[in-house]
Length: 78
Image 1: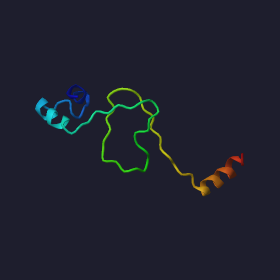
Image 2: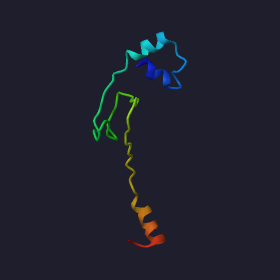
Image 3: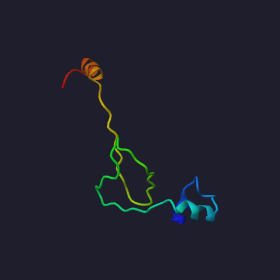
């Protein structure tokens, strides 16, 4: 874990002793492809650091009806 932590710019110059102390608060977890790790709007007591692999991050954005009406006026209904 220390090797990974040292690759993070904000921790790169921390002494090893301090990184060892910080490492105590980390827990390594593994996930399978397609597994949901966090759902938007859910509370969280964690910070996730991605060591390797890929992830998909999505954000729900509500469309206001007034905006839709204005768009229809500009480009016409579908």
